[in-house]
Image (cartoon, rainbow, N blue to C red; front, side):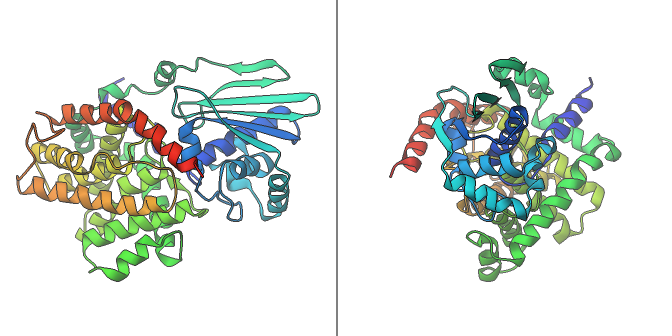
Length: 422
């Protein structure tokens, strides 16, 4: 496989549609599949979840649920109305007529949630029982990566659940470098990337427009639009925030995700789209810029992991700003410095789960990333040795990955402890 083919495959693997926040949707997906495996609706359900799953599901509204939040709601919605064949759009099949049954099942408190002891950040097991019949579905590392299915103790399906095996099933991300990403974006045939990236423009723009039209969550987007001058930066922050607010509050519009996250999918794309609108950028240039933006974000997140205490909006905004530097005909060095400046400024913003304040964090991440871009275009950058900034951009990205994946592990535990304490 050539480098271009690998980069195209990575985009295809990562840029997929999802309806709702991906962690509760993953639970709904596994719940729907477990119900299918059991063959009937269960009398009782156990949901054992890693800390990061609990953190990211606790406060987000489940799409098509009538405003319900939390793990139990996600599991009940998937079990009663979900269609696991639709993947991360599993809840698109839930109907209004399903809502009384979902609420009744929740009222009976038949779903028990517990903390799963695991070293994986994304890991959960759904068990269902009806009479003497039982079924189990286990998911780890990726949102729809089922590694075990059982019915009445018989193993129907199993595969290696190690992170190494999961990575082997995907295109090797170690080939990603900023320089090669730029080269790919500039030279790839536009017909190759258009079918992958155009849905991101369509879907993510639609949910952001909905977020500006109506009140969702904390209404960050409308607040920014009403209280600031209508320059490009305000519009980029506001539109992206509006999409997040709608998504966190149960909007039924799907989002094309990045690195397993809809918020990151919005943040990595909308500032670039808004820049293109504001400056009359051609559609082809926009597609190439979005290929660059998405891959730079994926490059960073590969070293961090799907879920952590590190807010992924930082990586996504960083990718968007780097792509805007490219659109302004910035040099390779200026693109590198956009990334380093951004990471030097806002690395460490914590992830305390999916909820309305994600919209505000996205706004701040976009502002910091665009400041990193402005500094780079003026060749006035943070220097190697300034905190976490290294001699080259690849070392800076690796350093941030180490901080987020290893250094913030105990931070993640503390965040969860604070979130679940009374």
